[in-house]
Image (tube, rainbow, N blue to C red; front, top):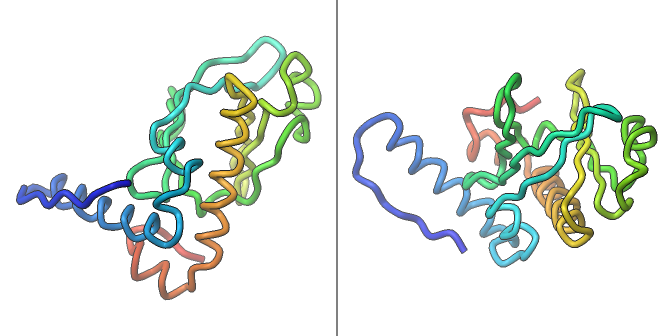
Length: 164
């Protein structure tokens, strides 16, 4: 479980860190603080990102302390994305990329994050079926939590995030 660590750092970075810790506590205290899948995601995992038959690269993914954003090791894109930006999490070989290039992996290891808007999907392979299950179930729980929040609650709790 995350614990609020009061820092008296007056810098912008220190203040932002306190805000993120408070937000993490809020979302995790809303029924997810003892969830094993969420705890697993907070630790992070090395997953394989699949783009084609020859392009498969290891990428570190980790749920951030705010309980709402996910850090994804990347060389070209912004390193974090919000759970609010996820439209769906598909298990197995459902996406076009996984149908074509995921055959060498167990369906239970594979999942695809489908984003709202024009951002391309993120096709991932976990090291084990258990790891894949934890990420899929954890992401779906976080998505349901965000969807259950009212517009006002989203704005009050996460004023720095665009809410449509």
